[in-house]
Image (tube, rainbow, N blue to C red; front, side, top):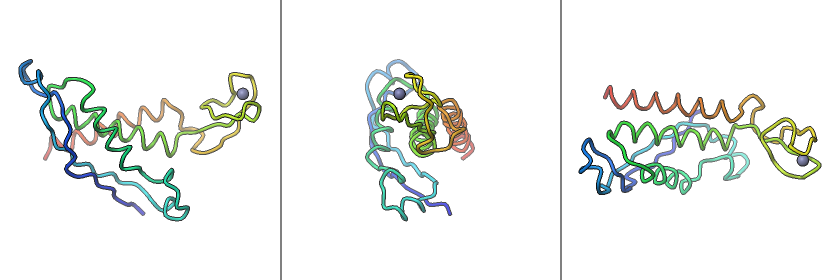
Length: 149
Ligand SMILES: [Zn+2]
């Protein structure tokens, strides 16, 4: 089942515009985001780690929008979608390995200490590269939807 999480009417400063003058001072942009995902596991386990933390989402949006200058709002929207997908997929699905010798998490099948690691959570084939690729594809799909509206 797919659930939806909305972040509506989030106002963040952003340097966006076609001319250097327009990009010179931050303007307030209003961001609405819909995130489609399954919250069944979060509901069963009552664990925030299985859900999406609104504060994290807002911080991600704000950090991306204020982080650099943009010519087009479409670029901002695509980037926000990509950054959110990256953090959600990264947090929920990305493989986390456990090194029993060092008692710490890492992302590789073998820890740098040489000890083979075990899968702690996530999906083994989803490593960082796959997360980045999905984030890029997700951003592209959202941008296409914006342009066609
Ligand atoms: Zn280790």
